[in-house]
Structure formats: C-alpha cells, structure tokens
Amino acid sequence: MLGYVTVGVSDMARAKKFYTELLGGLGAKELLDIGRLAFIGESMKAPMLAVCTPYDGEPNHPGNGNMVAIPPGSKEAVDAYYRKAIELGATCDGEPGQRIPNQFYGAYVKDPDGNKLAFFHFG
Image (cartoon, rainbow, N blue to C red; front, side, top):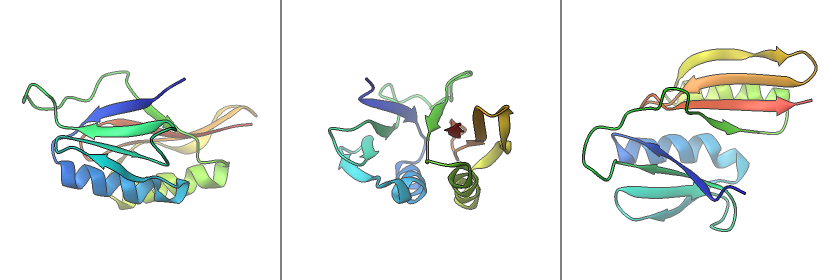
C-alpha cells in the first residue's frame, strides 16, 4: 500500500549515511539520488524511505505526531536497531520494551534531524 515515506533533513550526506548504515541489515541501500532527494530501500518496487531537503528551501521541521515505523523482525532485532541508531547519532525517545502485553514491543529514537523512528515487533 505504501510506496515511500519522506522525512525532511538538513544535511543530505549525513542523512543518507545514517539511514543506509542503519537499515543496511534489512537489505536497504541508496537506490536513487537526485540531489535534494534520495530514496533508500531494497528496490524501487518495494516500500522505501526518502530523505530530502525541503523543496521551498526553508529549514526542515520534524512533524509532531509523525513517525516512521520499521519492523526488523523480532524483539532482539528491535533492541539491536535501537542500539545501532543511537550509535549512529540518534537520540532516545523511548527505550526498547513491551508496550502492549504480549502484542507490541517497541523502541523509539529521533534521527539527527529530529525525525521520530520506531522499531517494533508484534507478537
């Protein structure tokens, strides 16, 4: 259903490095770079994450209530991706843990530009 999700960034080189290193273990790589916009994912035919500097030239602003949620496959993987994001310069926005008993396990970070990410596992 989703083609891609875009997050605004202030530094394209930093953002591409952050997301390709963070999501590389899930098969993601930089697929297309057109200067102010780059697509990161497994293939152009699968859901992707795009990073961009805003079209209007104004500073990027993370949305209040906006979040990109990534399912790495297990609770252990949630923990690992959370730690890796922190190592790559993200800040904690909710340590890994069970959020809904026996249903939802999640961890939350903000990327170097303040965009919120969740790593989650159902079950």
